[in-house]
Image (cartoon, rainbow, N blue to C red; front, side, top):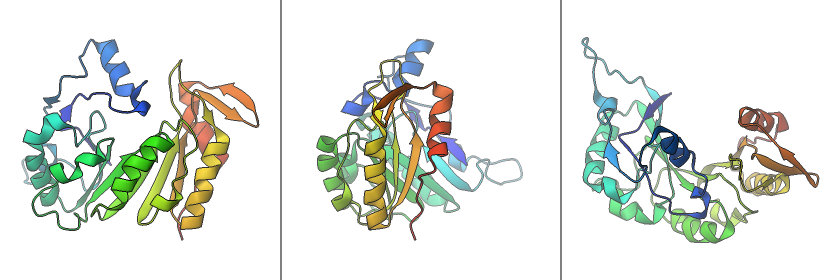
Length: 237
């Protein structure tokens, strides 16, 4: 597993961005998140060692986890990223986006029905955005599709959008002012995934987590652990 952030910085664009970890982290470091800049790791996938081998190992590459791969400011750099992605067929590049409506403005000319080594995750947080974004997402030529509902702000009926989806990830919001996550919402989305034979992962509880009508306040260190303890992840058959 590797991380690759060819640029950094982002702008809030949806309801789920309110307590974004990127903005919170940048604020602590005195960085303006709205400044979108190339990083020193821009060419990381194709950098080589003295022996000629790639520095970045084969495997999954988590891409643009401190920004959005489809953000407008990166339009001038993205073609070069696609060239590097195409070169590294031994890697699988996975990225999340809240800007799936920009898909056709951002893909390379030879995209066709998708690159085999690219996984695109469409991020939604409520029914309103799911009905807009997942409707778009369902019609796009992408070889590997996932949905991320984190932070999940309400129950989402997404079953009609689950055709050709490989994985749905659900999680709560982490912040002292976080909006609560109801366990019933998580279970309902899991049931939708089971019916459509789509893998499901409960990634993390929220800071405020409601189960059996009781509100729990959890520490950041416990959010993922408690989700794992629920034991409700589902792998498609």
